[in-house]
Image (cartoon, rainbow, N blue to C red):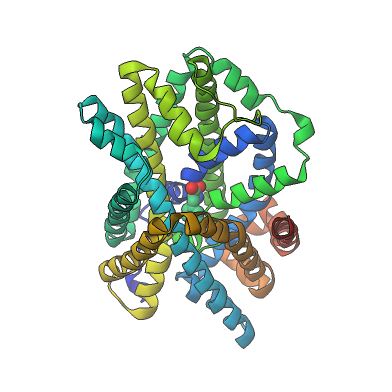
Length: 450
Ligand code: PFF
């Protein structure tokens, strides 16, 4: 099979695809809303620490294992294992990763569908189609199902195109567009009254809160979700990287882009909230905290856009298109994890595998749509709160304890000859062996207990 596997055509293609996976709703929605409700810059500071000190080393574990094995997560973890028991654990962790990726995609597609609907809503309203606009922006099974289907179809079509013609082609088109829209929106919001107060809240840390344990837990969870760790997406993207590339520097680039875009998104969302307040929109809840989560995205921001007249329509559409793009470049990586397994292990063609896996995930997603109250939050909690950190831990254990250290070094040296003398190699092995597992376990324990 190895001969038929895809490979990214260039370094930039890989960086845009992998940072496309990382940059998603987690950056543009999750990070700013968490920052808003966790002391602004205090959260930002802790997030930066967690991302560089823990998420980056864990990302490297996935990329290195992937590039070495040139295979999907199940086969890759089995390849680096050397006993019957570790191969058994490898299969178990690999399958758990694939299932988790599928479940994340099942809820992600629903949320992404809302973004498309909210992008279309104001356009319909402006065209005099008030009823359609109301349907698009109101909550309902029909709307949720229709737009989830549209989003899943887009994801499936891109993945069925393959690594270069699907993932790379679309990531290199969409990521620059995402950055342009984000910068344009920030520049516009900065000119509006109230924005400066938002910037102050965001950038002046309330140091008393940086060291609060819950804040650390949230920042770590956010960093892991944001870097798409634990479910085989980064591993499989790593498996499409050429042996001539310096993998440590690629990982650094992805981490920097992911963090950079989260920080930029904060510069959009938090000032926008204070502009909304200036325009008379309520931005604090009954308890006096900044409104976050879905109310922020689907109530506060649309209320802000509607105070801006015709400009508000353009700004609103641009914002929800930005969200849709961010979601799409992430969802393709989520689908690629199970699809790579089905093509490589069961011998299906990529197209057949993409449609088959998408059909199964769409079905799960539809079940969530029709049992929204019972399943939506449950699936999010199960996957992002429990499965992702635990699987991230497993990947660190594979890279740090199960795979032989000399083989790890050999893999890093491909494309980075002086790796052995580098700062990276002096720090990373111990990190992945001790620091990452201990911190993840501590945080995980705290989450479960707390
Ligand atoms: N990193 C994406 C985000 O920040 O929205 C979410 C995600 C994508 C998580 C891919 C996991 C994954 F495998």
